[in-house]
Image 1 (cartoon, rainbow, N blue to C red):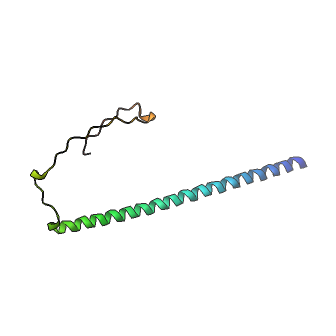
Image 2: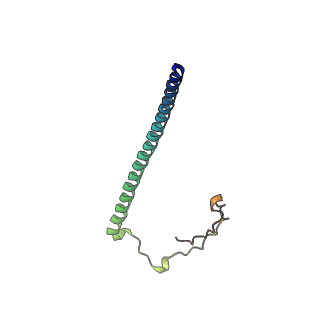
Image 3: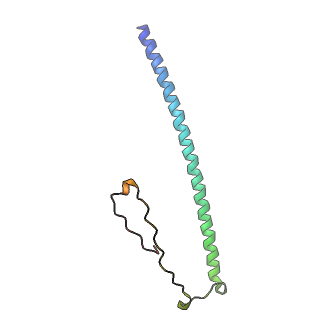
Length: 106
């Protein structure tokens, strides 16, 4: 009886050590993922600020029409449609789907 209880206690102790190690590993993974999330949020915020500044700059140019070049249909330049290079190989999972070419301008 004494050996069975000692074996059970050793087994429980080892399982607790294993679970503690797994818990520390998962906490470390979570902290790393959270740090990446915070970094991506910061970058997204910077990108939104930059696009807002660019939008304000372009809107300020519209208020000063002398800086903009007047256009007419005579000044339009028509470029030929670009040649499509050879199609890239589709991913193996997408091989069964028919992919259509996207028209230029979309």
